Image (cartoon, rainbow, N blue to C red):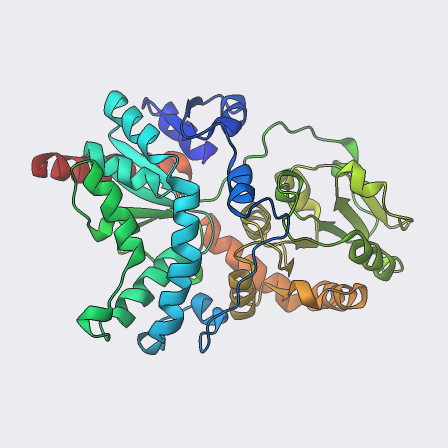
Length: 422
């Protein structure tokens, strides 16, 4: 978001970034103008409160006969026959609860600010459904920013297709009900554009998109690493193939986020100890202190900017997060995804279908398995060839500065149309 925000600023536009209060310092450190919306209580605190203080992560059993992998299949050959029971269950039990948990506390503040400031365009993170409600309330154009697989749009279209096959009295739509209630409070009617956006901005190569919006602007992914310092060792030629192992910064912020345990991490390091590689592992200091030994081929750092180290790497092991995945994609690096992120199942399918890497589920992780998969990445050149093909496709997208004119055009079109209909 930061490079796109600065591209708009550099073109002379006013840009404000709305967020919960706990994120304001991150925004202002990027040199952008922050707008606090929502409660002082963080999202993590709200989720813990709803769970009744339970530290255990949410667990859901998938309603049969639904296969979760079918959500992430590239292409549309078999999507018309998906079972209503599974699709509606996912919407009712996963999408809608997360929608109101993450957005209910934001809507009123966001609408109030938009009515005061009168933006022409609202660009929304895909989880921030409140942005579409606020944009619609003031007649602004609005689009969705996509930095990962668009599961929400895929599920929504699967749902609508399945809904058409149901008797009229059984066509419940809890997501529509959420949007319709908020839109009605601000004098608007529900339209499907509230859910889908009037357009989308997507960084993934076209063949990697689950369910592309009819109006999609392709955007080159430009990493933003906050404050970055180039350490001398990064620029030194590695003595052996360099492998980065990182599981993102989310685990530091969310204490109950599933991740590799200390035991699993130590077993993995031990299993990789005799490989002729230079392993760079990013872990916080408190976790480093719990490891009983660190192999000679391993360098442990608290943090390293991905955009600085990835060009020196032969492979990367990561959790499937957007920054890690997109960063490796932009540098043509084969991936080994150890699936702890929310959309890691989709990354697994994407890697299988593009050939750009391998993946392990959380329940498959052992030191020997990580060694086996990493060795395959290092020895089979086909993974590098596939990763470099993805890189070329991603680099062909326009940079943020080149996207500004398209955003101006869509804003003029949708805002003027909305304004005439108000």
